[in-house]
Image (cartoon, rainbow, N blue to C red):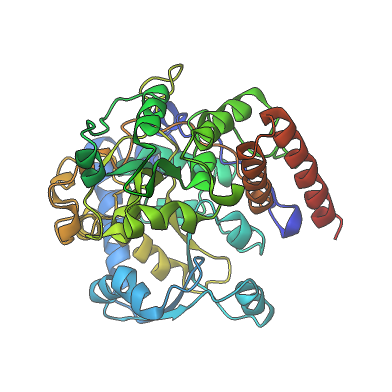
Length: 456
């Protein structure tokens, strides 16, 4: 499957397919087939694994220079080293680790134009289309997984299925961590007004009533019941409603499940006292009042927001409410991956890094800092979550990720255009426009912008 240029369309496919597909598919099957064809019984299997481990050790001990690139803006070298570089250097003392910071929209474009090598790109699945695929840097690592007998059965299966859908059966990268969305609340405000805290297992109508109760004016201060990181909530919506058709690039805002997902959340901004400020959405006017002004009772946002809130507000967290017609289903998974690019001249050395960051040792180190793991079996390490982050002490950390992820939506390189128009539609809906008109006009604007991009 050829993926290149601005005409790239990314199909992320179904996360839940992994529950049946990943257990026996992919590189693990390739390793088993080789074992069966090489030597009979367990002896043959052990021999292949030993050879893979020995080869990995040999590669790890050779000097190599690896350049890393993160697709998030403004991640400094110091932060990269703290999060990834330092433990990688400790594990591979013969590797020279270099880092290039993403500074603006032209950073990667300029690197590609000047043939600056990037060995490993670190990107959330949401940014992958705009970086790895737009610049045609993808590289199938299935051969390396087979060569080193990599055990992919240890990974949370949906993270692998996303990659298999992305690479048309291959794999471009391995997951290093993930996130989703959660409901954070200010305990002090609930105590102040004598209202019971939110709880796990609520449905969206329960949350709506709670938001109405907590939206009030007291002592001249307007308290809002609930705010959103609306873009992320729609991006990871529980109806698994995609924004765009991956074949036609047309907006799907008028599809039934998309309308239901949008209206289910947008209705909260029509609660008296809980309005969208000036009918304009900005993450700052949703998030800052929660932990700075302390005038918002609850916020639905990415699961890692606790690190932003810190101890500035007396917060705790519960699951995102369930839809009545999808009980038990949480929001979608949102993994970050390490990708070996097709620019790399050190693929084997780079793969040792990928194998390491998906190991139990690295995942244990990472989870202590409050970063969710991508291992399928977390029973050994989940109790360590946030051990090195005092802000998580006593918090309901089990609810930061859903027990069951919703199926993933299909993402394309035009996601940012879709997001912009959906936020515009939100403002119009909050101002009183009916949902169908707001979304239809948003779809028309998105289609026009995408057509212009395709025509360039």
